Length: 293
Length: 165
Image (cartoon, rainbow over the protein chains, first blue to last red):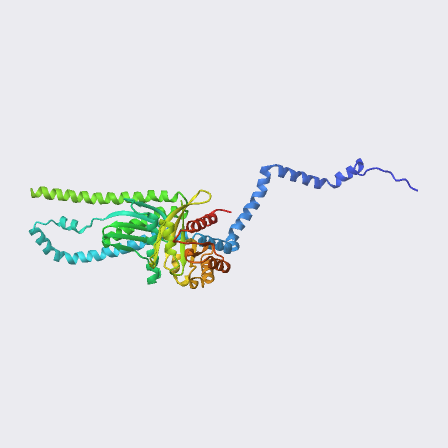
């Protein structure tokens, strides 16, 4: 029987030499690869062009590959935030329509003025003969109107989002609820589609309602508004709507206070305008009395 | 404070306005005055967890079927008290259909079924009604029995629904 020598191939120096000769090329390549991988600069110069190429390809292919996904996402987002979008759009569209109506009114007014000018010369002469000043006539045409209360009401549910009042005499929650009930009742009873109830009148008291997409603003006034004053008030309410839109989107326990601040500012501005008008009138009456003396 | 809209629904003459007046003002009037349109009032209630909730209660005109109520009235409601008259079987003939209609219209709304005018019926009648329907409360607007309790139970259920799970 032949005896087998038990020498390990791995530890045999001759075998190691043979292995080194055969694997020389591969070992050199592995060393180079290690050098590249360990050296960031070397790695960058090789990898960056590949990434850039892929990115370029991705940029070109992205619209084609992901168009339907993006469209779906956008549709979903629009559906989800439909209320917020509409709330933002309402005052903007309202303002545009208001601007157009104002321009048309101005055109009609200009035309009427031209026509009336001739006939009014006679009445002016008549007034002057009687000692009545033109400014007195103009001032007498203005009405004394004061804003008493203002409410921001959640549409349909009638829940009060915020309010401000000059006297705090009534329960604003009940008023908001009842106003909504009346509004819904009238709109439902007359089935006027998308039309909204805009004014509720009670003797000298008038409640002006401006409806937005998810809420309404109700302004209670003492005194009746003329058409031009209604146009102005609507403009102001659209501006107010823009300010309170972000607050109405997320109603929590702080919303009422924040909206109240905005409404109080609105009140102040209305008061200032009224005081300005009153002081003008007082000054005018004073000068009239002085002239008489 | 959180506000929630609550509706009083049911046939005409079942005592919705009497329950409304008893709860809001703690008064009762023997005269029957039919409700025209809607009456809205509010009341703040203290919940079991000591939080407070403002209930905006809409007392609407009674209708034989709730499908006849102006549909916009239901919008935004968080709770409904469906009232029937224990003395008039005609007022509980449509309970199932009406409740099904309301659940379909307002899936997240808390609905409670109330048999009113307890002071006018016998215990046997109450048991008979209870065996037929899943009644949440038997009330008497006249004596005030169970009135506050049923509004409170409704408020607690509404509040619980608004809390994250």
